[in-house]
Image (cartoon, rainbow, N blue to C red):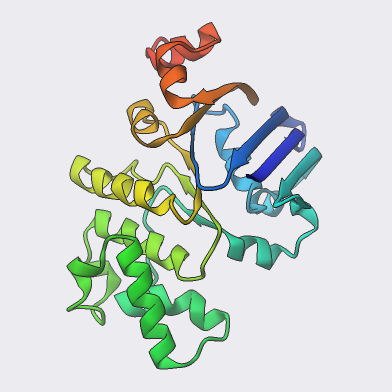
Length: 248
């Protein structure tokens, strides 16, 4: 089943042509890895999926992008961001306790019962594979967690509002290999319940976790295919060159 579908999607920021006629279907419960060098359009595409680009000055677009066959640009933006959560490159915990970081979204959506908040927090922390590490320190400051734990806390905070899609924008760029492995393990397990789009500059990470991989270059989608095919027999020489480190 197609969860998100872009058709002829182009994006400009003033005179900058950031995304050029991109057409791409993303299936439910898949991990789509998105790779490409700087200024390739991959983050612009990702941010379009929860309409963050609209916050930028002089933004305009053409083409269409659909979510569950409905026009994403016509759905209430707060509903879009509830259904399509985003985890950014650098962990950004709130200056609150571990518990209150995860419960924050639930509270904002009107869930005031403490018992219900506790259920949501425990479920989200378990889904982010952080519960066992923090269950005895839930009311300590989130800033006492390691960088890798903070990133998984941010994943838990996203999960707590029960999205359908999770966007990851280079979520492991500042993490050590052990923390990176834990985040990747969480992604692989989360795809049973969520659709995941991962933008990464680490081609090895894309190969490890992606069911399919999309390669962007200079605002264009060069190709998308099953990950093993992209990394062993890409259709375009530019994809092969990027994967082999000849540019980027």
